[in-house]
Length: 375
Image 1 (spheres, one colour):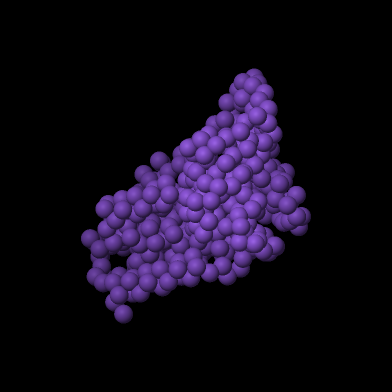
Image 2 (image 1 turned 135 degrees about the horizontal axis):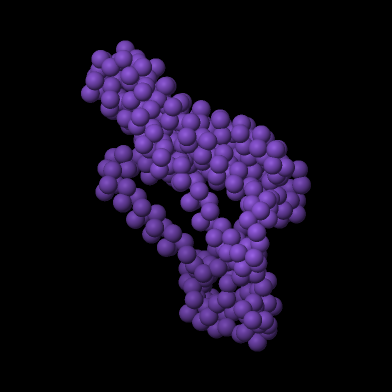
């Protein structure tokens, strides 16, 4: 089987795997699926007489009259209680004309116990995904199609496999490494091809991920950090999952979060090494590796700030709050949730910095004796 046919066969296998994961739930949730019926609903009337307002915070209940826009009970109107907890990150306040997602039961064929699950955004999310896929196709052609397929596969694996396995009590670190290895293999072989370049990218990426994992385990213990520093971790325990290894989940989140950037850098180095060997088939092993290292230095120089910008930007409100309180830098950096982000950024960056030499050495060994033609 030549390289092109091998790549297409691999792509078809991954596409079928995506369909299987999308239409089947191989693990499911340990407690069962409690979802009811869902549909779009149009808010036709609002009663705010029970709502209590204190400055910008609203509590108590907002009474809605909602007409179903689709589903088996299209056209029916129901009354919905929108309970306001006073927490702005969770509450949504509606007005007539809003389209919301409604969840409800129909025990006797009639809609009952309807709940508003937020403004309806699913159509816009689908539109964004469609535009993203079209952009990939326009810019990268067939490679863009493979990238979109690997993106969908990664999302499905996390949702259908990794998260349910954690809830079932599987060890987070070893399970996370297995999932990252699976995703890395699929993404690198889909984009880079089932060839030396793909193998070099996979091996270099996994070496960087393993280093990141080891450092995360050690520094989490040295920093005296536990997984409860993550948002919703404590709420997860109160939901009945008392035996979850939150620290292990925290460590897994560190190397999973950096694995995408690690793959990106490994692919850059492997592609450069492949091109060098094709243009200069007679290049020696040492010179080939040093050429890859020189490329790695340039790419690593900009990549090291990637995690800093990505993680710090998601906590802007937290840092602004600390500044309004006049807290000194020592107090801020020593806080457990800030220390957790420092660990996340720096340990992830270790993997980024080291993946370049890892991939360069692996590529040099794989391409040794390669004539620069075919696979």
